[in-house]
Structures are given as structure tokens and as C-alpha cells.
Amino acid sequence: MAGVHQTTVGKDEADMRLDRWFKRRYPALTHGRLEKLLRTGQIRVDGARAKANTRLEVGQTVRVPPLGESTAQTGDAKKPRSKVSPKDAAFMQSLVIYKDEEMIAINKPAGLAVQGGSKTTRHIDGMLDALQFDAKERPRLVHRLDRDTSGVLILARTAQAAKRLGEVFQEREMDKVYWALVHGRPQYPAGTIDASLAKKGGPGFEKMKWDDEEGRKAVTDYVTVSQAGAKFTWLALMPRTGRTHQLRAHCAIINAPIVGDGKYGAPKMQEEGMLEGMGQQLCLHSRSLTVPLSGRKSVTIKAPLPEHMKKIFKVLAFEEREGDEIN
Image 1 (cartoon, rainbow, N blue to C red):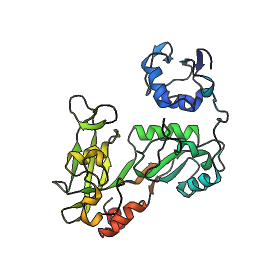
Image 2: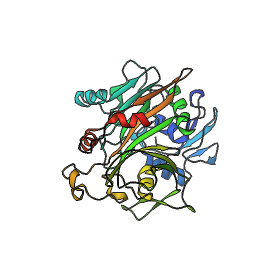
Image 3: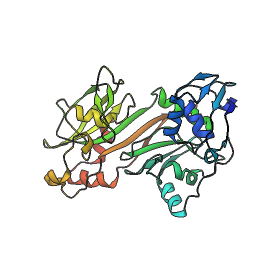
Image 4: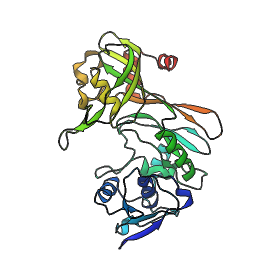
């Protein structure tokens, strides 16, 4: 796109977030650049400044500034993407743990990013063509997991499903359960962590910290599943809000950092005796999501533990069924 372009919001885009609207129409536009265009007022809705979470209405006009040829509008046409290799296609399809007409759920591996960045070329979003199957559209992301977090990730199979599921996530209408292995043991075996979070630290050292004045409200319920002496505790975490690094920061706040999470104060594995040689991966797993289906009952989707957590659970004599008995 060489010049400013005015685009009208269509019927199938009603109530869509502005950032998702751009992701759909201009898939090559990075999130960072979009945020900059919004901050500087180059993107406007009906002539007014807008934010990423602005909800669009049918008939509104979106001012789109020059984006360059690489971000040419795709609309509902096929998006120009690099082809997924047979190896990556087979890999993506092996991750599927649930599929119906509206959505697909995969068990995201730890260490694989959901979306790309300046230094990330291999990611879930870039391989979604492999999961189109018999649908007319490429599946869409409706929520995120951190790169190092494993577990249930939901994909919408149509634009309509993406809108509905996006609203379900936004309104917190689904039950989420994460499993975390933490160092030590919380003061109380179960409870609620209500600690607002704000990003602190300089470039390259940012992390979320407790700040009731400047932070955004963050609430997590937790319950102890099992313990290995006083050194390790298996927690089931049920977030009520969805802040960046919320579960990692909240566990650190109650002096029980997640195993493998050096950023939030976890000691190195080689310093932990029985876990020496187990690597240094984050032990946080999105175990289950209970999703309300359109016109039907809810479905609970569960993801098996990743291999690095299975190995540690075996050493600590934890069994997966213990967690499901509590959830």
C-alpha cells in the first residue's frame, strides 16, 4: 500500500477488536508496528484515535496508513504465506487433541512460540495452514500461551467462531486450569492471590511485579495437589484474569517460584539435588480448558504433560490422576 486508505467495516467484522481486524486483513503487519501506528495516531476509526482493543461497528471507516507492499490487504482472499513443509505439517497435526466444526485444540509444546517476532521465524501461527483440514478458512488464534508454557491452545476454524470464542475468553466464560511445579510450599495449601501487576525493569530485564498503584488487577486461585517434602509442591492454578506472566509472577509473590523460572527467582535445577540433570525448562502447563459450545453443553479439553514435566513428576512420585481428582 503506497498511500492512505479508508476501509469500511463489513457485516462479518462487527464487534471485532481493531488489532484482530488488522491481523485478519494485513497478516504481515507485526504487532509491534501496529502498536506504533496506533500510538502515533496514524490509524483512526471514524476520524478518531483508537486503541488495539477498540471494538468495531458495521459501517465504520478505518484509516489505514501506508504499510508497504509486504503488508498488502488480503481481506478474505488467500493470504500469501510460505508453504508449510511436510515435516512441519505432520508435526502440527500430531499436536491436535480436539476438533469440531468450530474449533481445534492443540497441545502446544514448551519452547515453541505462538506468534513470530524479530528473532522468531518458526511459530504456531506460521504453520496453521497445516490445520485447515476440510474447512474453507485457515484456523485463527483466539488466545495465547507464553513460549515456554505448554498445554491447551484453542484455534477458531471460521471468522464467526473466532468472534464468539474471542468474546468467551474476554468475558472469562471458561474454566482454565494450569499445573505448576513450584519450589518450596505456599504458606497456605489453597487460596487466592490478588496482586496487581505492572511491568518493571529496563530493556531486556523487564518482568511483572506487584504494584497496587500502577499495576493492572490480577487474580489467581490455587490449590495444592501434592508435595514432595518441603522442597517441591504441585499446584493447580486457576487464573481469573489474564495478565502477562500472571501465574509466574503470582507464584513468585507467594515465595513459591515455578521450577525452571529463573526470571522470577527459581534456583537452577543443578542446585536441587534430586532434579539435577533434568534441564532448566519452565514447569508450567495449561492442563485444561472448559469451553462453552454454540448451542450445546461445554466441553473440557485436557492436554497431557510435556515430557520434561513427566520426567520430573516420575522422580517426585506424582501421578497425573491426582490433579484431575482435584480439578
